[in-house]
Image (tube, rainbow, N blue to C red; front, side, top):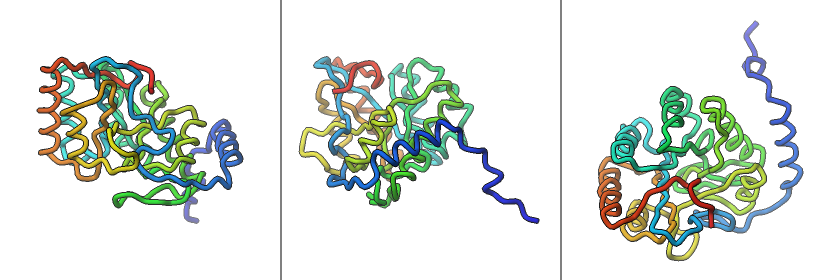
Length: 251
C-alpha cells in the first residue's frame, strides 16, 4: 500500500491550530478595499528625524542569481546593518547560512513568507506574484515561516514583507493580530505605487530621515545590486547612518 503523504507530515502544534482558528473567526467575512505596497497599516518609516536609513533585503528575490551572497558580503565588509527577509525555500536551502547570519550582530532576520506570496485574503496577485487565496492560506504563509525561522535561529522574527510587497488592508490587520509588523519601502509620493528599481534607488539617493528601503522584486539583477552598493557608499559619505529596523520605533 502506498504511503499517505498527509500522514507523513508532522502534526500541527496545538497552539498553531488554536491561533489559526482564532484568526479565522476574527477576520472571516471581512472584505478588503485597498491593494498596494503602502496600504493602511503598512509601516514604511522609523520614528526619528536622525539621518538614518533602514536597509532591508528580500533575499529570496536574489536566490539562485548569486546576488544574495554578493550583497550580503558587501554589507558585511562595509559593516552595514540590515534586516534580511527570508522565505521558506531560502531557509530550506541555506539553514547553516541563516544560523550564521542570525548570529551576526549586523543583521536581523525577518519573514518573507513560506512561498513569498503577495499578502491577500482573496487571491489577488501583483507583478506576476500570486497572492494567498484566503485567510487560512495567508496564516500559513506567515506563521509557518516565522516558526521555521525560529526553529533555526532561536528568535521569532517580528517583521514581515510580502512577496512583491503588495498587501490588502485586511491582510495587514491579520499580520498585526499575529504579533508582527507588515513593512514596505518609504515613498514620498502617493500611496499604492509600484516600487520598481528606479524608485528604490531614488529612496537611496535622496532618503527621508528614518526611511525604510527594502531591496526586492522579481527583476533584481547584478547591475541593480551594483547600483545599490554605490548608493550606500555615497550616503555614508554624506553622513547617513544605516540601522536595523529594530533600532528605532516604527512610525
